[in-house]
Image 1 (cartoon, rainbow, N blue to C red):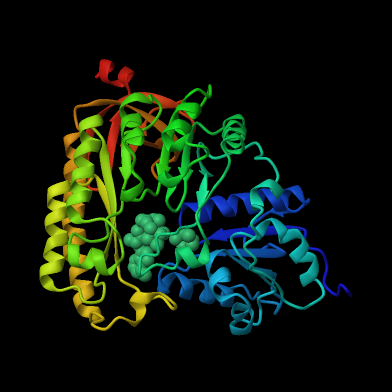
Image 2: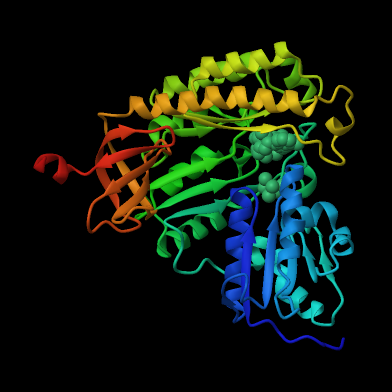
Length: 442
Ligand code: SAH
Ligand code: SF4
Ligand code: F3S
């Protein structure tokens, strides 16, 4: 192989997708740093990695328009790698559709990025969308110093559920759980590297298992790591929510009182067409059990509006479910037909205007609930983890145990601090925290 292009010395990774996609982006950065490359901005980098998402059509469009912007004023462009779920779903098509692309690498193959960079130096596109049984995790370097205060840790990947609208089972492959020991080692390395909170990630994270330990057993083990203050997990599937995990919300001190449990629709008819394999009632009963174990738990969900065949009555069922649950926050999306999924060819696709109208109505209800949740916390005392500087001078931003963004102005606070505050004001998207000293002085 004749290498006509120079070895890239600097890189930039841009992630477009979910938390797991962000995790993959971090790991690719650490891998490239280990190869002697330096992280820099997109404009200056010799290698730009676009870590893509395939979940909705718009996410895919963003990537192709991003590729167009990578051309520089002098006519040159960086080496371009398309990683992530678009790479997996479209494979070699990516390099055909966008000729600038040098590397296409799927989410289960990115540990081979350095070899692919070398191959691409020959001037020919290098493509790797294998899904090896032997996991990439063993081939990646150990986690480095300088981790995020709130770090992600993938424990489970892939999905066997095959909801009829969803690409994840095709882009991430079958459900695989990482071994207990490897997860524990990575968690310790993250904490050594500066993390105080770890969010365990999986497409169905609560399906994680290693010899019957289960996610609750993993939480118990992580609870014992000194220096780790908080444990979270996402995303869960209602059918994998065991009593052990529910009880862990009562018994495991560091496990935060927050549960993201997508339901997608409040209509049994639509849930069936989605192949969700749970009903409206089974979901609501599950939440009753969760609330019995941990009464202050904050709930979050995902919703899709405009699934094929969704009638006004089906949508009203979704609204009434939301009213019944009272979410602390929730995500809602317009249904996006995805190539190769069963729902994409179902008849009765819903007109765009109807979907838009439904989304607005649903989001209005969710926003009201989120605001009410924030207002209800005013007057309480809690503990926040400082994650970053705020927009205003002297302002810092932290998270409450219930995932609320908390603004605080207090000299001397730094990222990674855990501090006690009183919640003194609430807005739709955040609350204000006041530290104890200030309250005494006032
Ligand atoms: N494994 C998780 C998350 C999957 S993707 C789960 O089962 O919930 C995150 C969210 O994107 C989903 O919960 C769903 O609400 C949304 N989503 C997935 N496919 C979609 C599609 N084709 N159109 C619109 N939203 C979709
Ligand atoms: Fe997609 Fe359903 Fe699997 Fe979630 S459970 S990743 S929505 S197929
Ligand atoms: Fe997107 Fe892949 Fe995550 S499709 S949501 S980046 S698993």
